[in-house]
Amino acid sequence: MSLFKVFDVSGSGMNAQQTRLNTVASNLANSETVAGSPEQAYRSRQPVFASVLQAAQQGQAAGNPNHPGDARGTNVGVKVEDIVQSDAPVQPLYMPNHPQADEQGYVYRSNVNPVEEMTNMISASRSYQNNVEVMNTSKELLLQTLRLGQQ
Image (cartoon, rainbow, N blue to C red; front, side, top):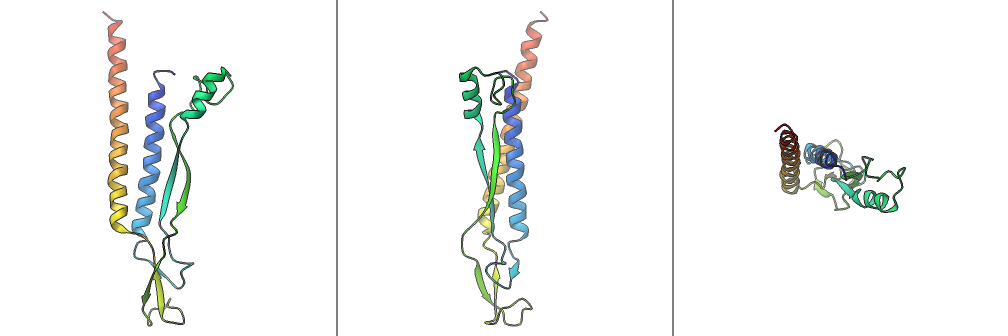
């Protein structure tokens, strides 16, 4: 694996955490929304990550230069597989005067848990910061290695 692959891995991690932060922001923005039926209510969304390291190792083991996981390729790191909706139940609220209330007088609030979303935001932010630190440290180590050749 090339020394520069660390930038690909960290960059893909940063992209994944950016997707996670965007999803958290969307969830928080819709946490207090209501709908006229449970099917129309906003449901919390979560990204699903997958590692692409295994594909890279298989390409190297096979020695196939055209395999996307070959040492010369860029197929390493983390990718966002999907964004899934939560199947947690939505909360019915009795508001008979609300314009979106159903025949029984209920509106349905989203199933977003703001405390859980804030925890996800802090975790994603710290993961993003860790990837930035990995990139900065790798850059400094590569620059120090180049300076060794100058002496």
